[in-house]
Length: 470
Image 1 (cartoon, one colour):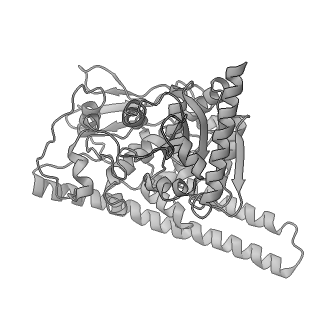
Image 2 (cartoon, rainbow, N blue to C red):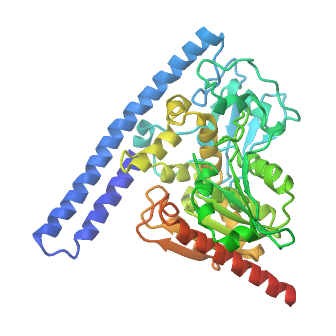
Image 3 (cartoon, rainbow, N blue to C red):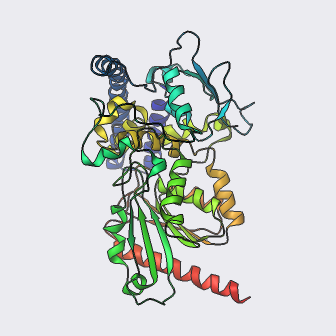
């Protein structure tokens, strides 16, 4: 068990380190207790996720049978990789060597079809080794080479590069789809709609110079993460000067949840462009992003280097990929984000969301399971090979202020993520809050964080004014 063994060794080494300077019996007992709890976590996690791997396969078959009985056909799933009549498509992620820069993925749809670039579709959607494969895994990563079913190929071919949206296949949702008001937008294509955007306009009289701020939430969240926390905590001066946009990302909150979307980085960025930058005619703007939203914020900053006035990232999911893992960067990041552990609970939730196929995760993420599933893999994991280049552009080509915040007690994304960002962007101001985690980095200290943002924006304005005066 490759992953579990690594975690157990780490926990045992940590326990040993804790006891290195302990000279009393009580300290020795504490060290032993930590080691024992770590071992129990490893064993229980192995049992639980082995069962879930088996249950996942069973539910896959059950869903297909029910789909066929009720709908006369079954929906494509990512765990099906069987070829039919030799016409299956192959997706390759083949760097020439482990040290070579990973190239774009190429889909070979059929012997007669053209190749299509799929650089924004993460291979973790298809390749997720089970615990059994981990136990028999040989040392050293291998670039994933896989075969997917024609149904999955059709799903990708129908989405990437399509000039016009395809009409819904069914007038009514499938038996397993939610038909509540929140999910009505599943029948709509992302190309024909806008994201939901909460706009807080300046409260002062017209004529006062204002600045724009775009807020991007994280995974399984919405604009409420900002509007119910820091928005009310801003000073009256800030409310009178800044026009604030809190967006619901594609597939989340009150934004559309199109069934035909793959929720790739490109789609998310394009929807933010269409729904905020173009719709409200933003020429220059500040960006504030949390967790997964930090990846989208970096993509926006790279695309609009002259427009971004400041870049503020909270708990960014940046995991520097070791050189020996370069050929399988997405798999490395998935193992870091979702270590398949039952404790702490937030790690268990991340592991369920990342490793289990749609059948198990559907109830876990009611209303957003399709968007959450694809976004997690295509943004968090799929951006693994892009984050270094994004941060290099921010460090070398952007002149704006960069601020990064993290909670030291964050059990989902370790504080090392932010420290790595600071090392990659030397001018970034890194702040680590003690006794704060992934959520309480804002919730519970809204006024403090609102003040931090106002200071960042003031310094950015002063720096811009000084630059204009030279």
